[in-house]
Image (cartoon, rainbow, N blue to C red):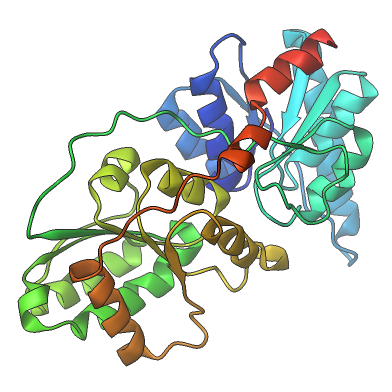
Length: 339
């Protein structure tokens, strides 16, 4: 499985390997996600790749891709790959090209509601395409709606506490703005409600000290970390989730059936996080906020009301939508066996 670049590409691949243990999985990635895969103790190889830009550095970009192409060929031949799955991002380019060259079966998985440029390009090499959202833009007609791999959970008993837990997850790109925005929003809460809130928040290392100081000054209970190894536990215990709109994160929020406040990343390629949020909102209770156009006072009151007053029920499960969804694991078996 090729899933380098970001956690958004890698986490679905990891989940797939944990859900379906009928196959032996090898991960191909670049240095950017190496720490994540090492923590999981999974088998992986680092390969060279590059995004392609038409400028003076184009020869260097192409050399990296060619080098990654031959690295991939060596790995595929050594381990006798039956199927190569690309989870998007430019890291997939050399490996998918190598699979095509070796006539190994290829599956492309698109996580977002707008198919990324790399997957649009590579999907021309195969008709085996899986999509997370049934209305994914730019997907080929042959694409199969499988959703995104998410680990199963064991839910604990429903909490009945006066202290409200708010879990804030922003990812590497989103944590910066949340470090300023979320404390500002909470500062507008009533003093009595500040005493009844517990913030669990992901922050960048350089923001930890300043964010902690702000919460201390407000007498708000908090835990702040750069990364949460117990993500599912925190999602399960949260009364409210504040998050960016990566496809994997949204799938996990849906699995835990929690109300969420969503801030699509404005700089996301093709504005895909906004479209992820729009698709997500069709079946899940949430509030989508444009961070470029925020009335802090108004948003603070709305979020405070959601946390402490509103009864947050989950939307009715759309059985028609679920019946249309196919199992990604079954699709993999079908491709390998050519059924």
